[in-house]
Image 1 (cartoon, chains in turn red, purple):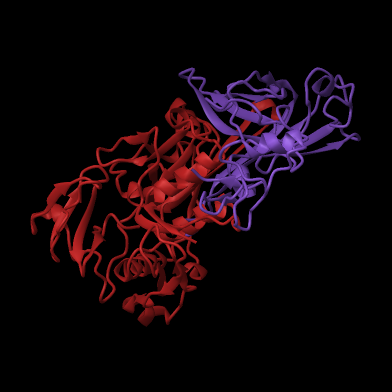
Image 2 (cartoon, chains in turn cyan, green; image 1 turned 45 degrees about the horizontal axis):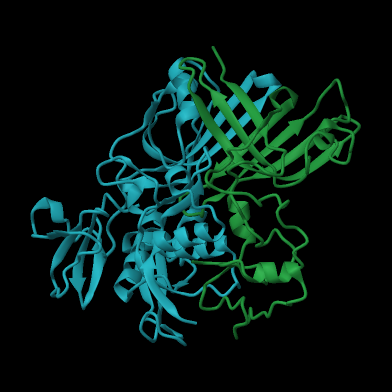
Length: 323
Length: 208
């Protein structure tokens, strides 16, 4: 098996090409870009990764799921048939809501579930022992990285998540980031909110039809007291009685801010745009050729910030921008 | 209170203009018996651009599910479940009824993997939105009620059924890998397949 360098989005694109679903202009799209608009005609970039050749032992969908377990973005088919890959940061780039859902057609069902809780997580990366493009090659294990939420552990006791082992995590530092990220989102055990809409004023009907997965919405249910910003994770549509019954149910997750504490977490220790550091603007293809440790860059094409740590670029993420 | 109007359209014909191509990956037999008449044996400049049959009036109910249950899960394949019935012709939606127009007027007719699209129109603005685009996966007909239940899945169905193979391992034309295959010169279909770039004889899809 040989290995090739690439990106998460690039690999998913290869898989779509493999089934000849390659009308990029009409049927590929990404998530939200740094300028707040949706990327059309191409998938998002995702992480820089090195992947082994597909050997026919896994389905294309399984490979995509493995990629996303490490990158934490989402892949779905849009309601109008477009293959959509949104990298994880796309969620945080939704800086405003697509719609405000109020009491006019609302049944909100908030709650919590202890079973959702994970406050300690281990992630182990696997890496190739040879250079990209060489063959044969083998996988070796990196150092297992463990993150935990001390506050949550004190409140609820230790709840471990299943250890994640992935060849798509590029460094031990990224493995730690991933572990911290999972602990961040799973230390909160708030259950998804479901919103059911069955028409009402014109605005409600438009929302039922126009809203899409991963859209950000504001909920303002003054009757039940549920309010806040959410991301649409699921949509269920039911039509019956010749169209007289037309119901749309949205499953929502909390938009943020994400819980952020956690001892040794590196997330949130750095925020380039706040002026505390100077960063070099470049593109993914034009990263500095001879970087020094401690150097910061902003990729203008991906909208991502990186810090050079121990000879590798480590993505830097805002607390708010992690989910 | 105005409710949206909806439409359900299905493409029955074998040669959907612009339908995506699956070549002879998981959808063709190794012997190459199924070839240009394959469901997906056409050009693929666009998706779902063929002729569609509007079956909205036969729809009894629709349930569409897309996305995931929570932020921690992977996105599920989008699915649509439809109940179809034509009161004036109880056997119309019977997949095994060869005299039904669905089968007699179309080729290959009422079979799996027909493209289906469901849309709805906003009564206020007149804007039409997509609700689901996918393929018919299965049909179950109940003559007692005349109802045919269609189960449909979006493109994730195809991705879940195709095992990709990278070029370095895809030794279709006589390589040494696990997928190694030497075409039989006496068999036209074999020779034909062996010259088709990018496709594995084992049925895997080779990545570019």
